[in-house]
Length: 287
Image (cartoon, rainbow, N blue to C red; front, side, top):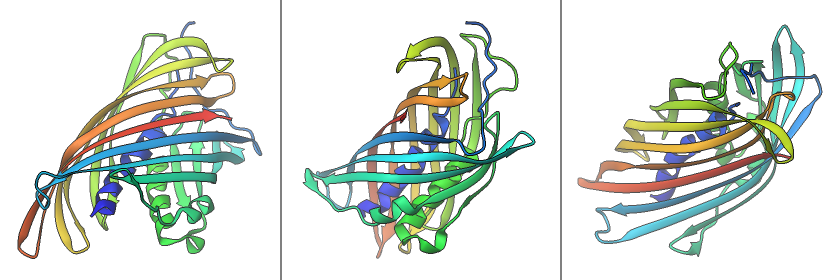
């Protein structure tokens, strides 16, 4: 049942990845800048620690940890009439998992580097026409990862305000993100509040600093392996992003979010109740 519960955390991590593309003197007009043929390369570190107790094993606490280091790139294929055609590709991936302190294999990792996502985006960060390019060549596990990434970029990318933002000013974004769990669509509610702190030196460059507060909730019933499971999960987290205003791209983003809740179900006439505590961390840097 571990893999079944792990998938609940994937959309939240994807949400963090997309929401962290935030920006932060006087008032600043934040805009993404695109030039045909340009490529931005990023490194990404993510980790997840999950503690789980279930009525099926009273008194036992299961601890599951995963860590992942990856590299991805964003290529501008074209830029016309204020919109860019972007291609996201993933290069290197190193991932490890542990259950109760013992190593656990993670299937389908070889397919991760074959994922390519294409989308259109304007200078404010609004995205459209997000699609996976090479679904036929992906493993089932890679298709699942690609589907979650596709939804993340399609619906969770930060949209900058149309007007300049002064240091100390804030803006909020509320949205619902359809999340396919076991073939059933559940809506993850995401509430993000961004605050422009100001300009500062970071990683040797002058960047705008944004602090982020995020609240997420996932409530509903999904069927996995023929078992209806009622999910009630809530979480909150904080993050900081440094945005290169002159270059129009993200320099560095870090975030930490904790999600807690329960999953209830019934199998062969036996009811079960599982409590979960998931702590996820992410760090993305421009290479």
